[in-house]
Structures are given as C-alpha cells and as structure tokens.
Length: 330
View 1 (spheres, rainbow, N blue to C red):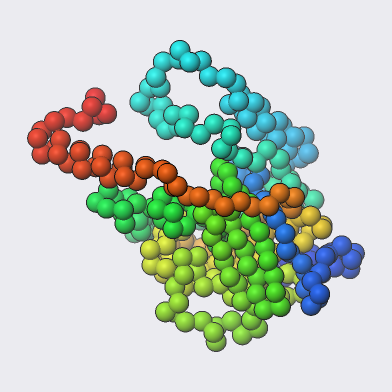
View 2: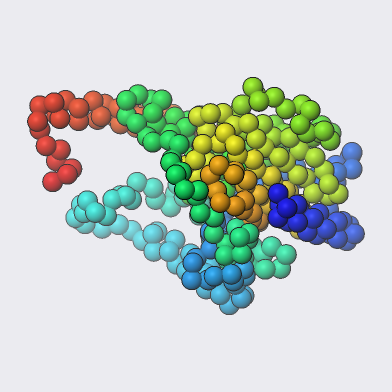
C-alpha cells in the first residue's frame, strides 16, 4: 500500500494548506463540513486515452475543445427526430434512442483538480489506465435469464448501476447526485440513484470494530480524519456484489474527501485487490456543490422490463425446443 500512503500524504498536505487559508467550512465540532448536495458528473474520462500516454493534464485550450465537443454532442442529440426515419439496423443496437436528453445529465465541463485539467480520473499508474488483470482471471458474474436472481443488482433495484454509490463512486449517464450528512460520529452519503445510503462510522481504531460476518452491498466502511481530510476504508462486501466484473472477496478501497474551495471537493480513491489486479491503482475526481436537492429515484415503478426479459427467455426456450430459428439472428 506504499503508493496509496504516498498519495494520502499529498492529499493531507494539500488539505492542510487550504485550511491555512481559512476557506474550509466547519461543523460545530470542528471538522470540515461536507454537508449539502453534490454532483460528480464531468467530461473527464475514468481511464486515460491510450494515445495520451503519461500526459496527466490538458492545456486550457485542449480542455475547452473537450467541453465544446461534449456540448455539441448534446445539441446534436437534441435535434428533432424524423418521424419517417427507417428502423435502426441490427448492428446499430444499442442504443435505440430509448433515452432522450430529458433523462440524461451527462457532464459537459471539466473542473480542475489542484489547478490541472486532468486527462483521466486515474493518476496511478502514470498511464492513467487500470492495471492488467491477473492471468486466469474470470468474470465473477454472468447475467442469466433463469430467474430474477440472475439479473444484475441495478436491474433488480437493489443497488445503483455503474458503481454510482461506490466505492468507487463514479458518475453515470444521469442522477450523478448525492447528499452528505454528518454527525460527530458518522458521515452518511446518500446517492440519488436507487437512493443508496452509505453509513460511515468515524473511528480511530478501524479493525477492532470490523466483522467479516458484516457483509454489506457497498462494503463495510469505516472513516477517520487525518487533518482536514476524511479517509474511508472499505472491505467485506456482500458476496453478490462485484466491482468491474470481478468478485469483491479480497477488495479493499481507500477513499479520501477534501475541500479545494468552499464549493468543490476532491474525491480520491485507491483500489487494492491482489487476487484480481497486477497492481493497485488510484485516482481523483472533482465533486462540485449544487443548489438543487436530490430526489427519490423510484426504480422500476411501473416498469415491466424484467418481466419481459424473463418471459422472452421462456419463449426462446420453447422456440429452441420446437426447432424454430430466432428471427433476431437472421
């Protein structure tokens, strides 16, 4: 965990320097006050484009071009559709236009981190890419249509999709919003997507209170303060939970939260799983304050998608038994 500790030292130093400027809002018990509504959508990619190599930051001109391209894409997607257009070709699926701009809230700006327009959230390894999987790695979860248990947790409304609630907390196509509440002994992060809530106790002795029997969907998180930086260590995930297609039995995630101005947080993360990755990896993402509150996400209320999926699977089984070819394969 040496690289994680080095990143942590830099994070704590940056946070303490900001504290000297007196810009950090504080709770009545003296710690940084993260309470409020936040968003983490951004045009910054999670992994760096391979052609950028070890280039960690864009120039301001490059950042502006990236933002303009994202905004132009939204404008293009917002153009009225021709009602007489032909049906999309099979090789064009997905998407099929099932989400218009009313539903999406993609990031169109690139906030800075420590004055840099980052080329990726991942900063370690230096190429900004997730390290290679270990030889022999096999995905932990393959979707099945045998029953509802075979579908993903997000599809079943048990957990937000795309690791929106984390850890690692990453933005998705919409609802990349969350609320933070604090008390002297706890921090609670409530994510708008599927209204997941992580209850994080603040403890000096982290492992004394852990139990491997306590396996939560988002892991067992315990936090501590180092200067003005909140550090959260998470392990002991529910066996049905996966991260980026891998099981989470040996996964540990260390997160950091620090102010970089009264309306911006820097969210850091280190992923360590010696049974999946050839090395641990780390990154940072900007989080900006917003005025609007989060809303209830009524997942699948009135949505019969999963019923249709399972009914379709049963129909295909009957067709196969009868020797009927599937039209979609023609």
